[in-house]
Every structure is written in structure tokens, then in C-alpha cells.
Amino acid sequence: MTIKTIPTRPIEGQKPGTSGLRKKTRDFMVRGYLENFVQAILDAADLTGKTLVLGGDGRFFNAEAAQTILKMAAANGVARVIVGQGGILSTPAASAVIRARQAAGGIVLSASHNPGGPEGDFGVKYNTANGGPAPEAVTGAIYQASLHIAEIRKLEAPDADLSRLGAQALGPMTVEVIDPTADWVALMERLFDFDAIRALFAGGFTMRFDAMHAVTGPYAKAIFEDRLGAPPGTVINAEPQPDFGGHHPDPNPAHCADLMALMMGENAPDFAAAADGDGDRNMILGRGIYVSPSDSLAVIAANAHLAPGYSEGIAGIARSMPTSRAADRMAAGLGIPAFETPTGWKFFGNLLDAGMATICGEESFGTGSNHVREKDGLWAVLMWLNVLAARGESVAGILRAHWAKHGRDYYSRHDYEGIATEAAEALMTALRGRLTGLPGVEAAGLTITAADDFAYQDPVDGSVAELQGIRLMFGEEARAVLRLSGTGTEGATLRVYLERFEPDPGAHALDPQAALSDVIAATREIAGIERHTGRAGPDVIT
Ligand code: G1P
Ligand code: ZN
Image (cartoon, rainbow, N blue to C red; front, side, top):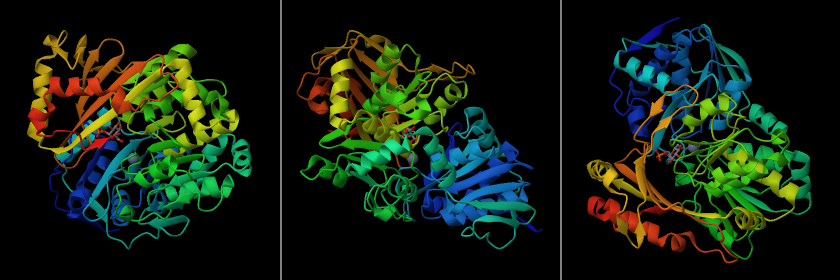
């Protein structure tokens, strides 16, 4: 076996503590860049003699990166790599495979919902044996290892044939190519009532699923069309493309404008959904209605017992801090604990592993459960289908009944994208510096009653995460949260999360922007958003 060593170069862009590396595809294509990060993972995680899972969302450079990683794994003593056919695995499927096959970890190639292609983004993420994003201790070790790489070990060999299912040798290592959908589909069949959903479709129920030319196409076809009997054409944009057809594969009203228009129009099907580049995000729509992710989490928590995999009830509900507090009321009603964690799925891992939470969600179109350790877009779609089949009501009917019973949390997120990093940091620093003086401050007819910077102590391992977002409370009902995105690749993105609880939303549904207009105005004024960023309004409203 010949092992080629490549001179190392520093990994520009990796932040300590982030569970992966996400950068412009062009950066990743510079010789040594990908290799450097992968070597750091292999050095820090010690996978000698162990099994690793590998797959990605199929974006541009996925195939090349997979071959590089296989050759590096072979030269670094990994015994076996289980890889999805064609180098493909959705993020939740990768998590399912790691768990089902008791692998030591997995490498996922994706930049999630960020655009792909030579001018787009690429990413590499390391997941541990529980199937979830590496916790801070591991990412810290990877970061440290990246600073001290002596050599990059890579096997000199022809590419593995990733089109052929089954085992093959790559130097001393075994490469096992698997059907990327099989383990995950089998898991879904155990969790949901496929007979009831099949009967729903047989009864004429109509659905549109937009795979956005990304990884969920094959998974969605396997489930909805092949197994559940939805007519061909139910899944649209089903062919994965390396550049996602030039689109931004992020399932939200802004990036799924066509699907939104369909659902608000005269010929809307009963139900629609979309998923992101790597399949962990979801958007849920009913005829004439949009389900905010925070509401989706609360409705799922309230109805999960209708699905066979959750018939015994749920142990707890976890939501990221900026997600609306609708889920907390569900937890209180069910008499189970509610957890509020920092933004990012990795914070749910310990709660799920410890059996303290069963259902988790983020306002950023992320929902999931203890079945894997990632959020799972198609899982959420199946959960909704199971609930619709069991209740025999429409999406709008279920949502309105939920609001009537529990009250409604009007919710919106305003994103200011691509602003200068210094300006964004100055805004946050200025606000942080004034926190203790904020209670009592008035703006737009509202008064701040409390303000803090969210800190979280993990109830399982005691680790502490600080500076996780500034919370401005306007009484018990209204709240604004400000934080900077940790996933962007250009400049800074300021996220402003706005919500108001209305115990009696009445019969008419008020538009969230209208319901939140004073919270929006007060937050803009107090944080000095226009003064700091020069922006009169947000770029994206969800
Ligand atoms: C965003 C979302 C966050 C999610 C993450 C990964 O992170 O806000 O909820 O976990 O993407 O999908 P952010 O860019 O806000 O740091
Ligand atoms: Zn994603």
C-alpha cells in the first residue's frame, strides 16, 4: 500500500466548537483543504480498526470528496466504511445508518440548505456513534488536531466503485456500498402507520412534495409514491442535481414561492411539504395555510401518540430558545418536561440520549425525535400524514382547533443577510453592554420588562454555553430575540425572532406581521438595527 503525504495547510474558516466545516466549494477544492480537515477528524476521533459511515447530499464536489475521504480513511487504519450508493446519504439517513449499524461515527458531506455548485457552498460534518453532530468536546479536539497536523495520509489507489452495491476492498480497508434509502425507510415503517396513510391516499387525498432537486427526491419517491401509493408526480423536482437546479434548497416561504402560490390558490392539493438540500429541514403547508415550524412542533407534540412509534406518549419536548413557546404549553398540558436549548441540533443530543426528551424542534424548519440524532424533514412530513390520517381533518382544521384550545403564538423571523461582520458585532456588543439598563425602556408603545443573554447549562453533562442570543421580554406575552447566524459563509447575518402569545386568537387569522408590528418596531428601535446595519428592513421574512 502506498500512502501519499500532502503538505498541510491551515484550515482557514473552521471555528472551534462548530460541528463541521462549511465554506465556499472553491475553497474546498484547493488541494489540501478538504484533506486537512479530514485528517484532523481522523487524528482526533481515532477510528483505527473501526467502522465509519460516509455520504452526502449529492452537491457539486460530493463525489470527489467521497473518494478522497475513502482513501484517507484507508490510509489511517479505518477498518470499514459504509457508504451510500453514489456517495449519497441524506443527513437523517446518515444518522439512521450510524445507529443501525453501530458505526463509530460518520462523515456527512453537505452545506445543508446553502446553494451548491462551483460558486456555491460545500461542507463536511463529523457525527459520533449516537448518530448526532459531534459534541463540543469532540469538535474542540478536531480543532486542536487541525493545528498540529504532521502529515496527511492518503492511499494512492484507483477510485472505489460507488455505483456497485456490496463490499469491495480499498487497500487494507473494506468499502461497503449500501442503498441510501433502505435503513431509513425501514425505520419510518416502524414509527408510522403506513396502512392508515396508504388508505388516506387511496381515498383521494392529494399532496405535493417539493424535493428541490436535492437529496430527498429518491427518499420521497420511495416512501410516498412506491410504498404509500401516492400518484406519480406527487414528488416534484425529484431528480437530485449537483447545483440543486440553480435554486436555494431551503424550504421556507421565500425559497418555495411556487409551492406557496399553489397552496394559496384555487387548485391547491390537501397537503404540501418541502425539504432542504440534505433532507433535515421541512416546511409544512395545508390548503390555504402555512404552518410555522414552531406551531408544527407543538401540533406534533400534541398528536404524536397517534403514531405507533409514539403511542406510549413522549418523555419530554425540547425546543431551541428562539423557537416560540407554544411547545412549552403542550409539555405543561401533558405533564412532561420542556427544555429550552441554544440554537443548533447538537444541543438536543444529550437530552435524547438520556431519554429526557422525545420530540425536538427549531423555528428554522427543523423537527425530529429520538429515532435519529439529527432533525429529519421527511419524518416530520410522515408524522403530519399520520396525524391527518388518524384525525380525518384538514391541516387548517387541525391548526385552528389547536389555536382555539391552546392559544396562538404569532411568530416571525427577520433576517438581515450579508451585513458587515463588524457592524453586526457592534450591534450585539452595544446591546449586550446595555442589558441591565433595558428593563423599563419604552419603544413603539411597549415596555421591556426583562432582558438577558441566553446561557444554557446542559442538564446531562453540565457543560455551559453562553452568549446564545439576547432576549428582550415585553411582558409575559411578547418577546424578541437577537442573535448572529453561525452558519453563513459571507459576512454576517442578524436574526431577529419575534413572537406574541394571543390566548384568544378568535375566528379570523391575523397576519403575523400585523400581529407583531409593535414588537418589530420596538426591537428595531431598541437595537438600533438601521443605525448599525444601514438596512431599512430585513432581507428574508419567514
Ligand atoms: C441555522 C438555524 C439553526 C439550525 C442551523 C443548522 O443556524 O438558525 O436553527 O440549527 O441553521 O441547520 P444559524 O445560521 O442561525 O446559526
Ligand atoms: Zn439541512
